[in-house]
Amino acid sequence: MSQQTIAHVENLINTKTVFVASKTYCPYCTAAKKLVNEVYPEAFILELDKIEDGDDIQNALAKITGQRTVPNIFINGKHIGGNSDLQALGKDQIKSLIAKA
Image 1 (cartoon, rainbow, N blue to C red):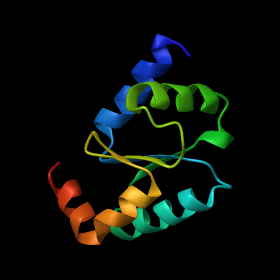
Image 2: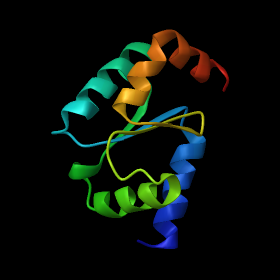
Image 3: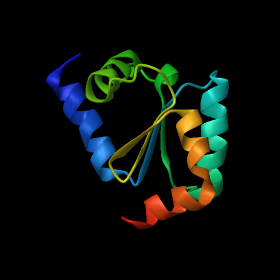
Image 4: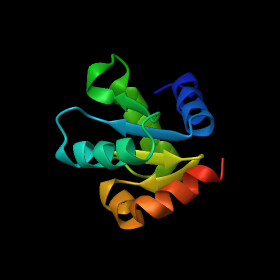
């Protein structure tokens, strides 16, 4: 993974209100995307298994966050974690984090 990939991922984290790194076949990703879509339909969702540099992006996310698994979720540049972390927040707290933009 290149410094360019890390910079690209950091840019996504810092410029997208809600950024979710996902894989289309992952049930945890599906649950997270469902909740995110209910709260913030404009979320930027990157399906790592559908893009050529998906593995590099996942490696960059692991280097940045220490989390190798998907979904990997960010709200206003803050690393939320995975699906269980998102679900634990609940809709009201997610909305509150989004509103701090």
